[in-house]
Length: 303
Image (cartoon, rainbow, N blue to C red):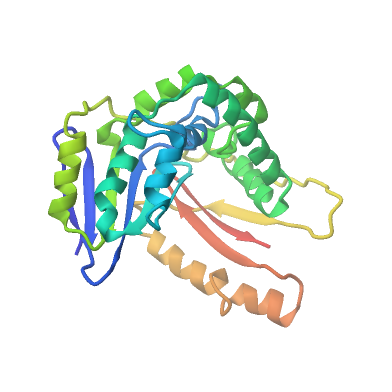
């Protein structure tokens, strides 16, 4: 069983102790992603994910990497529509230093103007990279059709224009608004006790002040009926994605949808894989998936 605690400032701590392991996985999950952004700063959550690694109040960019990777660990982060996560996997004996590094990154990033301006080029190239990969870009197009004129329909990385216009003040303001302790979950699994993690969190983070609860723009019934979009490219394969409205994260029907996903296209035994690839030889890749968010969801087929 996992254990939970909540500090007085709202920081949530969730742990699962596994004593017969030599490693620990630890992550700070922020309850913010692409759907929380205003149009003017589209891509801010993803941009901030990058900038956090450039240095914190206590650690430089190189020290962040050395403290984790120098002891055989790994460190990374990702941004989704509704969460941003900073995580590491390390030998269990190095949990103290790893927690300190991650906590300092998440709550005390320096966010310097020079780093922001330099990172604009990196993120611009990332946007171009995914645009050049049709298997990824087709998913952006599907989101745009499913949630038009809504943050969920926009690219998580933003556009080249919004990235170029981003300032360090924009990112500082975004961090201040969404990275309060009441909007963060510390999740830890491995050979470490719950009591140990609560002690570390209290020592480092108990003095942080809670901020106002975060909000997001509702996304119910925004697609307005069936839509088709086709983009012609001079490549050898066609990539397609078909999406229908699914269920939100607390809808009990999501369990039934998960079962349907397994049967229809969730693995090599699924009906779509058997018919489209094995029997007819029409495609190399075929499958289904679904995502359930706060107030909406989508079930999709892609090939």
